[in-house]
Image (cartoon, one colour):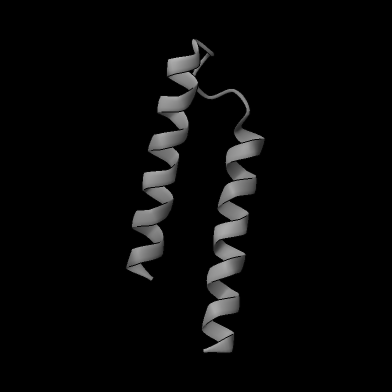
Length: 51
């Protein structure tokens, strides 16, 4: 579980750096970030249930 939290934090930092590098306002398009978080969490839950 700790690995998933660290991974989500890492993805968030990369996402915000990507926005900053494109010159966008930081914090816009949070729906995309929420979608990425959702996919990671669902993948984690599926992996826990399968294995």
